[in-house]
Picture 1 (tube, rainbow, N blue to C red):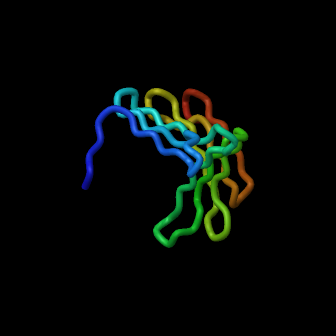
Picture 2 (picture 1 turned 90 degrees about the horizontal axis):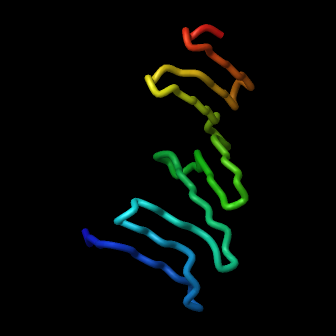
Picture 3 (picture 1 turned 120 degrees about the vertical axis):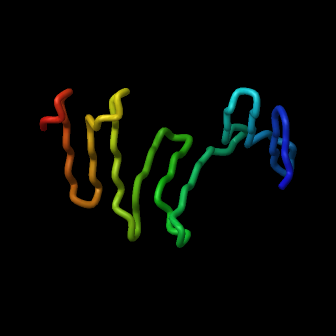
Length: 98
């Protein structure tokens, strides 16, 4: 597999930068120059499970996948759980109590 060092720039057919991978900083930049950056993550069957786009939208789930968002504290305990499938919101205090 090819390996790259430093920065990789990917441009459109008109030489406009739209994707940048920066190995030094660990950054990925998508979009710009008239293009909205979008990240799509699919499950093993190719069904879209997560979408992040340049409009500030995060979409979890869709089609046959119920979206779930879990937020954890620094110690790894859960503080917020959102379930798109059940429409549930669970907030937990520092003791883990709803």
